[in-house]
Image 1 (tube, rainbow, N blue to C red):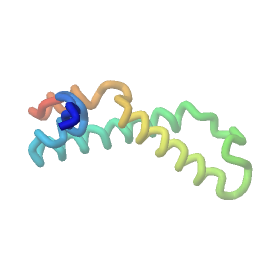
Image 2 (cartoon, helix red, strand yellow; image 1 turned 135 degrees about the horizontal axis):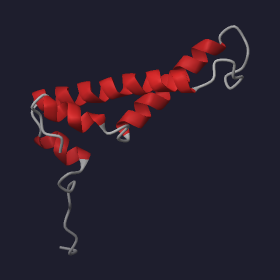
Image 3 (cartoon, rainbow, N blue to C red; image 1 turned 60 degrees about the horizontal axis):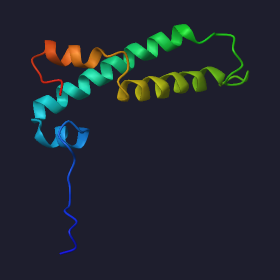
Length: 97
């Protein structure tokens, strides 16, 4: 052998956690993340100025603004968001690890 041992994901890594979790835990994690994403989308909607030309000024600008809010909210939630996911998961009896 070459002395290199294959290593899987470390404990606590999302891939390791996903492999150890039950289908119910996975669904709970997904639901908590979607909820936080929805909440963040509403916060971003209020925070971004309505009259901004960020997405242009054409007739479809509001559509692109909505897409931006959704994209940002989803990625913020994936990155930990406001920290509500763990609380939601614990309240519904899941493991937040």
